Image (cartoon, rainbow, N blue to C red; front, side, top):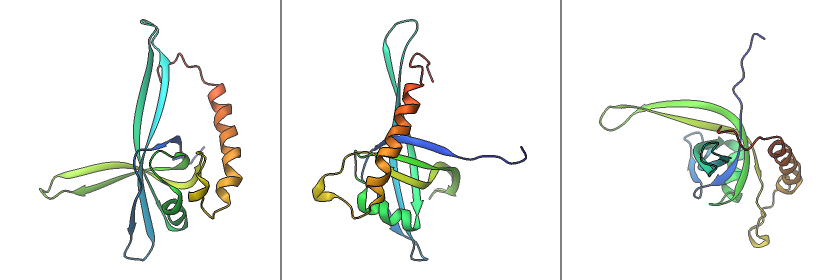
Length: 147
């Protein structure tokens, strides 16, 4: 294989409402933080351990427009995208780095309150399909592994 792959799949919950920004081009940018958790049993102590990782997710364009309307703190989402490293200089001139997940697919897995239900049919169409994929993946996981 001559190429390479940069693909990320995450299933987790939003830690806060998304931040929405309009770019100079007029396009929308939506940024949100999501948590993924994994549990395993420590082989030595027998205790159940839970590790939570936080991921910064960003999306643009039409997917951002949809995300702005439906994403809220606590919602469970399925995200597909790629890893992108950013760098910038802060006010003191120190070089800073951040790793983002640039989402190109987003599916809400939480049930949405009918009062807040979006007008985008893809949510209903894809939720069952993605939920089934996740359940299949989880059933194949050995929960005694520490990673």
